[in-house]
Amino acid sequence: MPLYEYECSCGALTERICPVKDHRPRIKCECGRMAVQVLGFAHVMPDLPEYRSVVDGSVIRGRAHHRAHLKEHGVFEVGNERLPARKPKPLPPLVDDIKRAIAETRRR
Image (tube, rainbow, N blue to C red):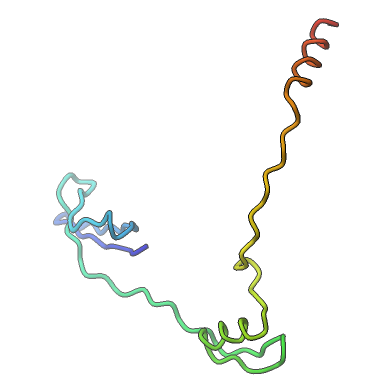
């Protein structure tokens, strides 16, 4: 989600992270006045530094090369893999639990 910066005439600067669909060019400041959006800086993700692959020892020279290398060797990064959908476990019948609880209550 993009980061938007707003400046109020009272001097307050406010940052707001929100989806593009919820973006407003003006928001209410804490002082009660309207703060206007100011042009902020671009948030750019840097490229990966060079590293040596643990799969085959080749040198990986950037993000695109990294992705292609992973795909070529059929490997994935831990945490980024897609897990198969889990089948829900059937719940035990509640009737037996209720009957057991009632029986224990009557014994007391």
